[in-house]
Amino acid sequence: MPFLKCLPQTIMDALRAEGLLQLTLVTQKIARCLADDAGLSVSELNCMLQLYLEKPCCVRKLTEMLGIGTTSTSKLLRSLDGRGWLTRELDPADRRMERVALTDKGAEVAKQILLAADNIAIQILDKLPDERRLPFTECITTVTQHIKTISNHK
Image (cartoon, rainbow, N blue to C red; front, side, top):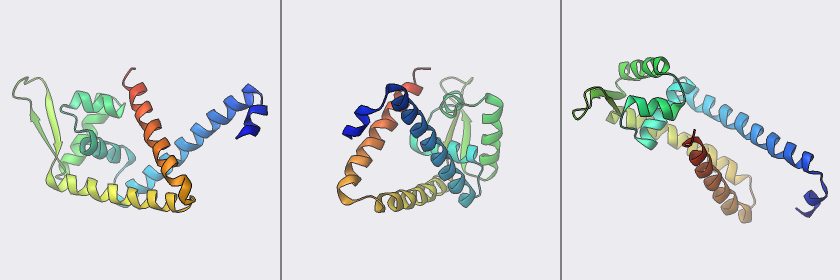
């Protein structure tokens, strides 16, 4: 990309910001599609995937990971609990903390969502030339890890 070196820094900054915003919009659209297909709200989808992928031990940790308030987390958990997709229990070591986990049924729903997401990823990768697939995947992995690191330092 030698031509990019000719662009002023302000344009380069705008390209980065626009690219990040476009990526955000696209990933939000994917999340909406996945949620709709699973009969969930996007918040419920995020909660299910956090519980499946990150396995937080307590409601407080889940609330932090989702970046929402405790009232919103309580509503999500009631909704998912009502479907039989998660368990809630007081932590035996600290009865002030409530532990949550997916049930087998909830884990199966999360697996189905991940399979649907995998199909979307395959469709995206199929549009790339063979020689660009691995670098793209590595880039996404690196960016995702970096974003997790940044979000953990709030």
